[in-house]
Length: 298
Figure 1 (spheres, helix red, strand yellow):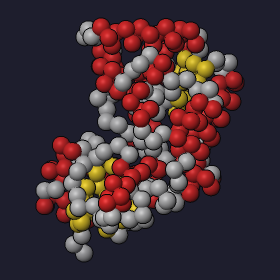
Figure 2 (cartoon, helix red, strand yellow):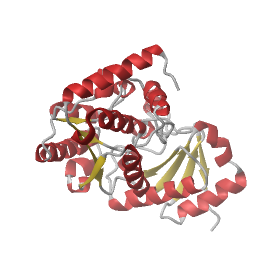
Figure 3 (tube, one colour):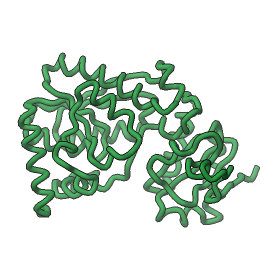
């Protein structure tokens, strides 16, 4: 599959940037962005590329096994780093700096590992579309001198997917993912219990055939988001009743379905009450009309 000239030029720029780095530790999440970095770095630098995945209660087991599989596909050396963000009070507090504290802890550990492995740089999978979102983790990356080769080469998300597809990466069209803590709206403390029930609920929805899945946990009230094109399927009365009953059995008190579907950053916009976004708050609204409350038959 040939690439458009502008994307081919970006790929060349990425290769040159990685060549100049000489050796890299790739902060590897298993998403398409970091997988592309790992593939190109491994192609250019061979054994001087090492992938490291952070493992904790915020990482779904399915993502951990996907990282393992993808690293094998690429042929790169892959390590797991075990961490515990729930030991960080600033992380558990879950305010707007949550990701900053998480990434600061992670990059500090990766920097130690980088030096032990005699690698020159830590690189991540941040691309230019990420720069416009609320990403405190990017500040932590700058403080730890973590480089973002996709940004340096001018890659957008669409560019990443195009190159990943041309290289035959199996996850080229994988939906966006994020750690489980992103399912807990800001201001609500993060607990092992909430992370575990969110993971179980999302596994349930994935087994039901939904592809883009988020289960937000508002202190025991579940709000389900699926891809916009999947919402109609989820709202089917028989199916929604069955799913609601199953989700409630996982420890949730109530269940709502977001009729707008998944949108990145939605949990950050929901603050004090279920479904209230920043736009709603400016307008004085107290509830978001796009949610459908479902109550399981007892």
